[in-house]
Length: 126
Image (cartoon, rainbow, N blue to C red; front, side, top):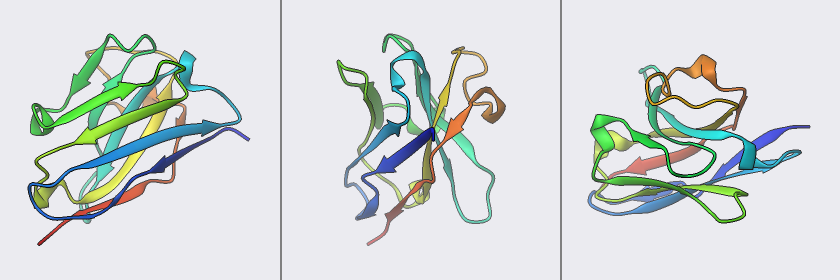
């Protein structure tokens, strides 16, 4: 069974940091572009960041630029989302998703991704 698993979420104070991880079971991530999305209560899911297969192509939503960094390890078995300077409005369930193709234009479109994880909760609160 092909599955993505997110980890690293939790409760953090405003201004703090968290690092989310995305791993796969049943397949390897190295042939996929990986996107991070989030969904806050009462809101639609939105794209946060994406990294292409090589790790060279990266895109960020405007609301996280300069604060979040996406990366993938050398073996390409894990994709990370380093989140710094967290704000209460970053509170959401964060999902990773794997897609066979990458585009800097449509990377935030959910229908471009084939596999999704179950999500990890990130809560930013004092």
